Length: 464
Image (cartoon, rainbow, N blue to C red; front, side):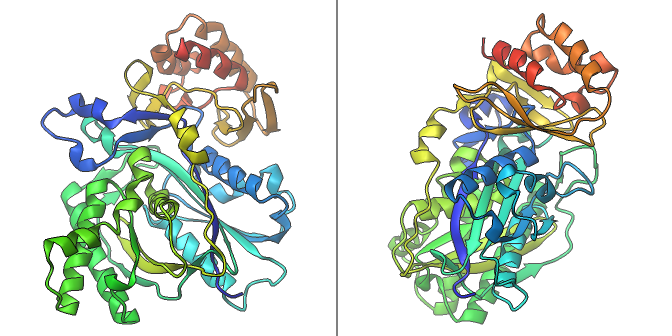
């Protein structure tokens, strides 16, 4: 296949958010302006990395009906796995829209925030190689994550989101064969407690590792290609928060000037820095989405407009650590036509999740919102054994709530009847404690184990 690259991208972010400005009281001694994040996406108990990935994939497939038989690759990048063995990609392939996609390679990629990029490059390489089945035309890559941190001071560094990328030949965004890599063994960010989503973070070391890796990748990319920032109309980086992306761009500019011998004037510095700024548009409204972060930044850049032939420099990073730099080019023969979040209208309908609707910093799932119902979005609910999933389609205005896929094991009915009998008298903030007590289980473990009938009650009360 020729000119393999990005055919389309779709973003799904939770319909709830917290204003970062409202979080200042959590850490009065620290200004949050440096995050350059306006809103932080917040998940409810009905969301996990699987439900986010499912919703993003379903949105993309709705834009491209009938492509399922032509899909030969379905890989997921995540660091928010819900199972130590079963892949998120295996959950995604249960979508009715993928029923005809049976001859498909299916796998997850895990390396902190880098997994989505690894899945993307693996797909591009396979589709460009003799190993690819010529009967197939497309690959799907999903990057999905929920970023949560322990302790009130760290909450503003979180976020959530999923991006589904459709990859194919003669793409509007051609992936150039120029990736370079840099990495080392670091203990800057890791999650050794398998029952918790909270990372152990060495903040200073993590930032230093990011910057050193960014410098290594730029140097290696420039050496390999003979190109420089002058050859790139836009720059995209991994965005854990806005200031980090700006610092990375500053390092690229510094290295560019050292290599070219060009004097850096203030005007020139501002012009080069402006090549990154479009990438921050979506991340400012989702916060950190780990593996999806670099794709939300790339999507932001595309939405601001690219001219035919424009080259975009992309830097992706994951703690631990691994980084990659590569470029994509706007195909003059296939105009880029990637839609934003419905003209941003759906984002403007999102609800704030702070203050009275905020459940709190509940390990192991982190800060959680009480939950609202959004038509047409998928939820995944665990059973009490944690082994099965219920895929629930939320109602549209015309349709009742239906369960599209049921594979629930024992004790579900007992749990539901016990919980529904008590929930009517509860305040939303009491949910976690009582839900756990209902079955004698740890409250955090039960947080996501709700059913369609219970969620109707809970959702109504949480908005009253």
